[in-house]
Length: 112
Image (cartoon, rainbow, N blue to C red; front, side, top):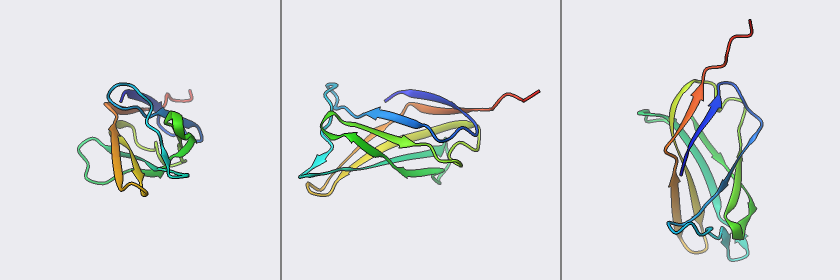
């Protein structure tokens, strides 16, 4: 996927994603009348434990568009993170994963 940068402590906004195949064609997130379950996962680079394990909202299934709403504690620690989005289609027993190059959480500037 791509690299993203955010500021430590920010929350409440959406990270909008368009999931595509290797040819750049949007992946249909439909699942026989329903939608795939899309997970957004992050971990500090080199760590074994996830710091974020959340669910995305599908906004346009046939165009592969979903978003993750950043929770209040998601960006509490500045650093470089590995991240991925994983779609699971229960009706077809299929899983597909998209990896980010990296996500950087930058330190917030001091108030004074």
